[in-house]
Amino acid sequence: MLPLLALLLTTPSQACLCNPGPRTPCEKNMSAEIAFTGQVKEIHRYTIGEFEFLRVRIEIDEAFKGITGKEAVIHTSTSSCGVPFELNRRYLIDAWISDKGQLTTGACSRTQFLESASEDFENLRNLNRTDGPVKVFGFATANPFGLVIPYRAAAPAPNLTITLRSGERQWQTTTDTNGEYAFTGIPPGEFQLTINLADLPEKQRTHSFTLKSGECRGAYFITVPAANIFGHLHASP
Image (cartoon, rainbow, N blue to C red; front, side, top):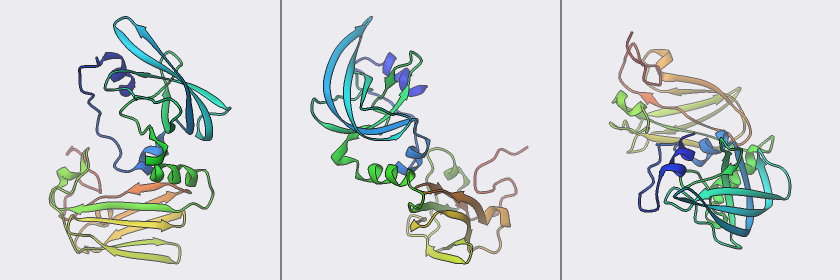
């Protein structure tokens, strides 16, 4: 796992480099292995060779994904790729199990002070409901190279109508000056998303997907016809 590799190989004097990740907290939370909130009760420093780590005991307030019980012991580096935990502070923890079987977190995760994590906190709670709102977002661009990580509207296409349908329900918006759009507070269900560009192939201007409680979906459009592009960038045969 790349975050763990960074924890093991980065010294305190080096800056931590994180791979481009999901654009929104919702996307990250959907794929999170372990997520919970809690208060730091004990911090212990230890070394492995030349590297220093923290062993942090946390009293769990609310468990969202992948963990049960009242306490957790989590490990992190003291380098720039670790999390500088503070005693008695409350955190939202985004963690994973390392190759050594240890609960681990780092700077490239979404672990953060709880008071700074309102969007993540609300989304994690919605993921555990059956009727939490969903979100659909994305952008329209005239440049297909915007559809590779990190996603961006390299040539924004503003003022285009985007329509979201679910059964008999329908929502509509337009792309802004950055080519971006978003639908929020939508009930979960099966959806069809369409951009109003009739000259594009149907597969290029329509996305179909299902979202459960609290989930989100990034859907991106290229506004120029291309036989080998269908909402994402594919290599030519």
